[in-house]
Length: 217
Ligand SMILES: O=C(O)c1ccccc1NCC(=O)[C@H](O)[C@H](O)COP(=O)(O)O
Figure: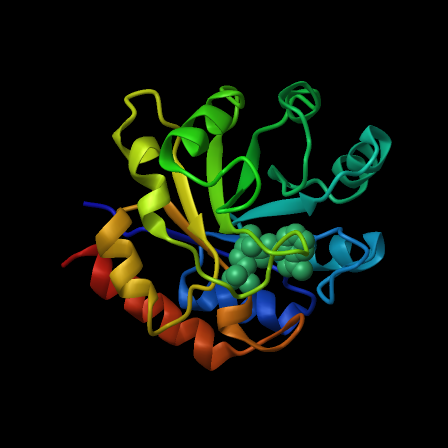
């Protein structure tokens, strides 16, 4: 059995890249959403990317940006995976010839029941993974949890993609979430932070320890 993979999202500082990688994170996320407290500039993103060791991947997160903006990040930063967290269409997401994750804001409009969640996901059949976050008036990184029962149909479906669980995870609740959902990976931001964009090495370590424990129990 493999340990559930972990992405630490919304990193803005080199020391947080180091803390995440030393604790065993599999991926880090860089946020290119202007309204986010975790927004990074292209220059910042390039420096952070260089600090990431081999075998740890880098995800670039966008919300409803023009195609050219994603291209610019691909060309200058070189992320491994794209994460679309807004209302991007399947054609748009597939248009970069790059692995991508589509985020679904579970419990929000059109995603209020398990069947609707599955139908929505199936539109993104080319996605490398489907990411499930809670609905919030902003687009994500809210620290809010959602009813994981809404993922029942997705978990049952035979054509499901790797499932990434997000939304309000922290060192205390992640163990139960892993055991209940058995996702491919977890994505966390607020739960390992001191404040917006400032991660806590201690919370990251505690989060990883909880994930290790739950993955093998
Ligand atoms: O982090 C942000 O500010 C953000 C802004 C807009 C869209 C998504 C954003 N973050 C996404 C994530 O950090 C994670 O994928 C996920 O939403 C978990 O966030 P959290 O509930 O804070 O752990």
